[in-house]
Structure formats: C-alpha cells, structure tokens
Image 1 (tube, rainbow, N blue to C red):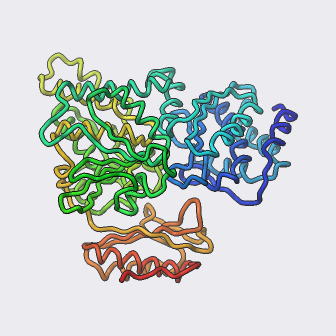
Image 2 (spheres, one colour):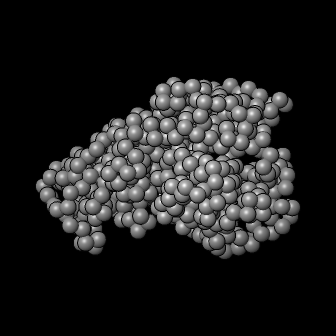
Image 3 (spheres, rainbow, N blue to C red):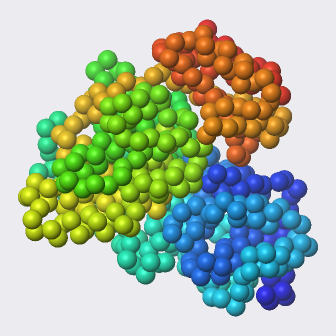
Length: 543
C-alpha cells in the first residue's frame, strides 16, 4: 500500500463536514455537497473489494429517484448484484472516519479480509446526469488510482447498464458484449425476433408514451429507438429539459397515483414512467371518463409470472417458478398469485438486494417491488435444461416453439438488476403475444385501495421490525395500536418501517375502499407520531 500516494490524494478530497452517512439498502444517498470524500473513499474500497474477489467491481454515482440536489453511490459486486451485506458496515465505517484514520482503516480491512494487496484491481464507473455527478466521479477515480486500481469509466449511463457491464466484463462476454452497443443489441434483437413482422396483435398497438423523469434514462431511450426501428413507437417526454424527478418519474406516479407533469394523456393510451436512473418502471392510463389507472410493479410481476407459467406448460419443462414480493405488495396481487396462478410467493424485507437473493433460489425467480423495481432470474442449471430441451428432436413442434420463445424472452431480460427499459420491453413482448391493451391486463385481478405516507421522527433508529417488516416490534405498543386500527376496517392491513436514509417512518395502509385506506393511513401515521417521537406538525386526518 503506497501510503504517500494515498495521503496526497486524500488531501484533494478531505472530509469537510461532521454529518454521518450510512450505506442504505442501495448505497449512500444524501446531499451532494456532503459526498466528495465519500466517493474518494468508495473508490479506495472498490479496489480492495476487487482485489478480494479477483474481479471487476462497479461504482454507480446516482441518487435514483431523489431530487437534483442529492447524489449517492452504489457499489456493484462481480455478478452484477448489490454489495455483499457484510461489507455495507465496512463501507459505512470507512466513509465516516476522520481523514487521519483512513489509511489505518484501509489496513484493518486488508488484514481482516485477508486481501492480497498485490492482486490487480479493476473498477467500472458510471454516473447519472446530475450536475454534481462529474466532480464526484472524479473523486471516485482518484480513490481507485490512489490504490493502483484500473478505472474503466463509461461516463453517463443508467444504473442497470452499469450492472450489465460489470457482469459482462467478469464473464468475459458470455453474458453479453461488455459495451453499451452490446447492451442495446442484445435486448432489442431478442425483442424484435419474438415480435416478428406482425407488430400489431388483437388489442395491442405498438405505440406508447414514455416519461423519462428528466433523467439519464432519456438518453438510453433515444438509443433504444435507433435499434428498435419500426417494431414499436415511443413518444418521449421529460427527456432532460426539466427538473430531474420533479413531479414526474416512476416514484412520483406510484406514490401520487397521478399523471406526471408534461405528459399529455390520451384515453386508453399506454403510458410508462421510469425513474431518474432507469431501474424502476410503472405503467398507467386514463379511461374515457378521465379516471387514472395504475399498473405498478405488482401488476408487472403477475403478468410476467403468468407468462412464464404458460411457456413452461406449453414446453413441458419441469422448472420451479416462484415470485418474490415485499410487504408493499398489494393484497389483491398476492391473492391472485397464490390462488389463481398457484405460483409460490415469498415475502422479504424491502430492498432489491433481499428480493434478488430470494429469487435466486428458484429455477425461474420473478421479483418486483410495488414501485416497479425488479427483474427475472434464471439458475444456470435451468438455462442448461432449456437449451438441451430445444435440441430434443422428439419434441412436438408446439413444445419446441414454446422453448424457443422462452430462450428468446430470456435474452430480453437484464437479470443483473431491475432495469426499467428491459422490463418495459418484456412487458411489451407479453402484451403483444397476448394481444392485450392495458384494460385487458388490468382485468386479471382487482387492487385493494392503498395509501402511503411518511412521518418525521426525532430518531428513526428506535424503530425495529420483524416478519419481513410487516410487524413493528419497537417502539413497544405501536404494533398493538396498529392492530386495533386495522381491526376497524374490512380487508385492511397496515405496517410501518423506518427509512434507510432519513429520519422518517414510512406508513403503508390498504383497505376495502378508498376512504377506509385514507383514514387508516392517517390514523397509523398519528400513532407513529405519538408513540415514536414525531416532530413537526401532527399528521392530518382526511376531511
């Protein structure tokens, strides 16, 4: 370890504030002016992680659906997955020590993890379109180079593209060509192959409106359009000319259940919103009475699961298909999955890292958060079985066609992480195959009305949950109060969980009708405020 070189680089990116930053469910995320020293140190840490794993590590500079003044960084492990949980605390410690303790902390990491400091290291860096991202990327690169790591800077890209590039580089191209061109070609060529020459089918029309949240996804959409040719028409809005994530994007549409700013809605027109770094996707439309209809991550998950179940039945393949949700999943979707589709469903804590890990236990694992973040994973043994089955000359033609369609569909999917644009192409593939518009898709099951809110508290760390965050065990007495409130409304449930990045507690409530859901959310919010150290104005009850 070249201490003088690290000291010299450290002096360029000193810690300039006392604020504590914590590695949350998807990395560090806070005000951008607080992050330069964090980025430098994560560059250092990524090199050590790369040396330990003997593989390339990714650093994505983004704050996803947060406002423009925020930024953050996600560390991507060799297989394109989120950073290993045990290293989240290591990252948090390194980010918060005094400048004088950085080198000692690095040495402790090397010793405790038994890292060979002489092993070569490669770090792949990407960033979103925030004005603060270039200087933060430079800080991260300085950290990588201070420990003699090799930097591969892909510039302005989406978060899913970075995950894709990491796994492609580490698999030496077997997952796909490790370039942005390779990314676009892999997804779109499979999409067009499945679609064939008949781009219309039944009620399906190959045209949609897309809200890109004024984020980096707009750049990717413009590139996708070049590769998609005439297979589908995409009308792009919020393409970067407005404020990032301001009253637009997947998170806004999901939480507000309303159309985004600057997106003209036409009756029954298929509309899509992605978030600022393009890893979440939400569908929606308005009907002839101007009523807004939302098709969120739960709807996407059930659509995909039903499609793969059909392909497995048609092909005769015996593979274990499962679906993973969080507590935020609508009760209507869970009932449909379990009792109609009869697909095994598992509930895990919030955070893609939890869903991805659980999905990997299935041969084919479908996972989505209700916010539209998710993908489909395939075991290597399942892929091998599918490929071998296609070579079986005794297979009936109908079964062979189903297997071929299954293999092509897999190529449309970015398995490494939730990818809004890959997921969109997958949904479009399924809707085209079924000949559905959004009204037909929506008929699958009925959502229970739900509301989300958040309560400011003095200290979120006093809140602890269990049962995949569906029960609040501390503060004492809060869960009992929630149970009493839930008992007052038919078909209702509610849960609370602390934010991973700010001193707020998130409240979810659903019930048999809209008014009950609104009242339950407000009453649970008030209980959190009273029993959990709420600050600021009390939560207001609906009129």
